[in-house]
Length: 319
Image (cartoon, rainbow, N blue to C red; front, side, top):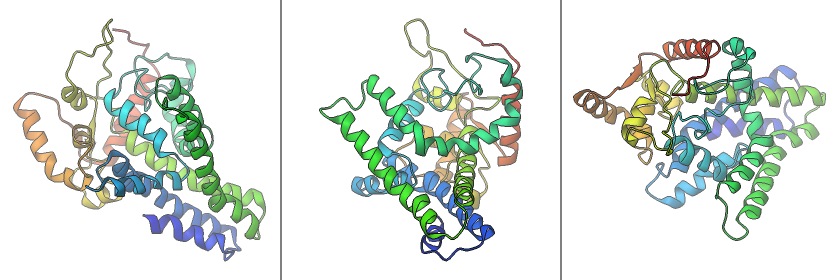
């Protein structure tokens, strides 16, 4: 995946590209590699599950920075908030959406949501553009107010690192190509955006169909802020597997088709989830706990679309 991401960019950066079609092709190939890095390398590494050696995990976690994001911010958003408060409105940042998208039955509804199942794909494609430009800075500030980055100079140091890594990323992903590729700047920028559109679409679909599904729940805390079920039950109730029999697909997306196992055992490398899944499914059946799974990825996407349509029609549920 690192090769798929970097090799096309190398060809672009050394000025070997003169045709727009080749430029777009190389950037799009790089986009698939970027998605692969996000799902198959940095995801495990930041969870601390890529290697038993935590230094290896730390260094491979920086691949998130190499593709324009930030490992420190993402660790809070994903490891802390998403994995602890899965599908809980206002707490899980993966379902906290801008006003034109609605991912929870408890979120406010407006007229635009009626059509979100049609236009959501465009915004899925733009998701990593948001990452590399504004989202990390917005979340860094919000997480500081929540109590993170509160050590001496913690916020300042994190901000400087974000800026530094993004300058490195934009240098080889866009600025150098603008200087060396003999094509109009708008074509180069559009090709760069096409790379991110491919990445954003792939990553967003894989992550969203794991949680925004017909059989997944969206629990609300009681007046004391407590969820009624225990953590393991909560993970099973809010998560769905898909395409569990496809080994090739599983390799391509870093084992994220086994989301149930990942949410129960996020510190275990994804290469073990296929074998673990049988044990988890049998145990869930034994204790009468839901074990959500879809036979294929296409079936999962179709169900995801159905939920988006439903959320565009039904009024918020507050109990």
